[in-house]
Length: 124
Image (tube, rainbow, N blue to C red; front, side):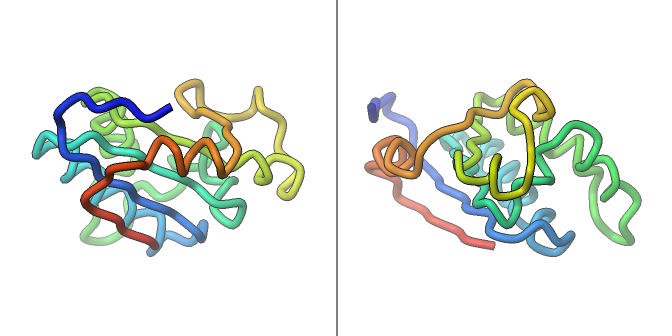
């Protein structure tokens, strides 16, 4: 499941859906992607709702912070991946079709295999 494309790999886990956790994860993810890293953004059930269409936009305009959609789009444009733990769907009452189109829903074991060889890990 892991593929070595020669790029350094950065794994960012978002455990909470509050603005501090989400924005820190997005900022670090966009920075890692901009420096050429392969970026895996993994969202635990506690942060699942932020990946529902329309939710991330609610964090726009926070004082001193960049537009969260700009960060999200930057990560996607630079081939980063947004992965939601499959437990987040039933745990938070979310239907797969409510998620942003780019979000992959995977088991934790899949994510662990994908993150194999990562040099940097961050958790928010």
